Image (cartoon, rainbow, N blue to C red; front, side, top):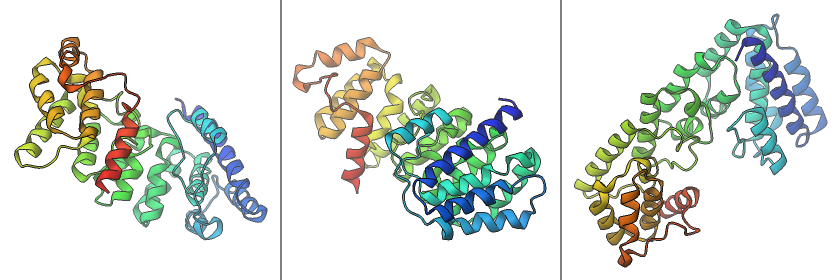
Length: 302
């Protein structure tokens, strides 16, 4: 994507975000945001930008955005894979402010953005990491996104990892694998991770196999969602272990293992499992849905 295309798409996103806010805010507030954001550009002083960014929450509040189905479809059209279903109104307004800096040029935009990250408090940092997929010059933002993954603040980590297409689109394999492994290690759910199935890879499968073995040897439960990115790489060599886990596990683990095996590229594994009538394996069960399984696992652990 060229810089010109990036600027055009950014201006379109700004307009769409302001339209969403106009449906939710008092006219005086939405007009204030539109007017102030239009002042961004080559002549904007740094302090003016920071003042506007920091004042957003006080002006617009922190209510949930709660986009309707039409707005969710518009979000997908603006940025493939993006769904602001868990955004708040002030996070949308902050995105408007940041994106309005794009006409100032790449270097000024990135300089001010980096300073914003460095000086942000937790709620502001969440907003900044959530808006990564909307920002131009994404190749220059990969390092910053990786820093969010390394954060010891759960909300910041989840802002990068959950419902955010940036990692799946721009992380290299090592960074992606470390993000998935950290999610499992810290108990952060995997079902909201965008692109999880698309980015499944053999190295991650090996890491997850080792992780599962370590947990089992320590007498600790294996996270239910671990089987999802491991599923495509399960082979008939795993058959005995899978049968043991299905036999000894609860209904939720059985569903997860069955769905994982259904994703396997090894037809022999699937056939052998289906022939085990004592396991009652049904690959066509309506409950075999990773989001449903993830939600059930989250509720069970909570």
